[in-house]
Image 1: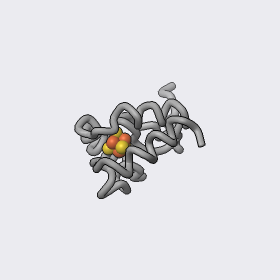
Image 2: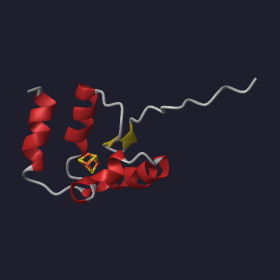
Image 3: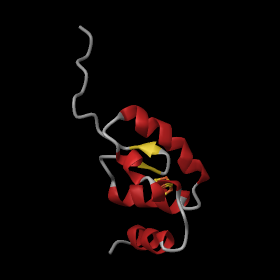
Image 4: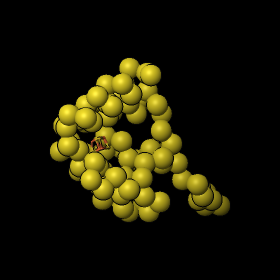
Length: 80
Ligand code: SF4
């Protein structure tokens, strides 16, 4: 197991997090939902290890440490 994942898994057993009770909103398909929950990460005791996890795992979906890493599956066309 990679170091940041190991640290995060251990910390999650010891702390409550905002996403711990309603994590589906952090991985919602709805962008406005993800935007609404992202600021809640600022109150999380695991903000730093969660950020390290995102750096290590390079997620392509969901909010980690207040940042939405979701790649838009339907990129908008650039204006002509
Ligand atoms: S910082 Fe990470 S663990 Fe904490 S609420 Fe945000 S996504 Fe969840």
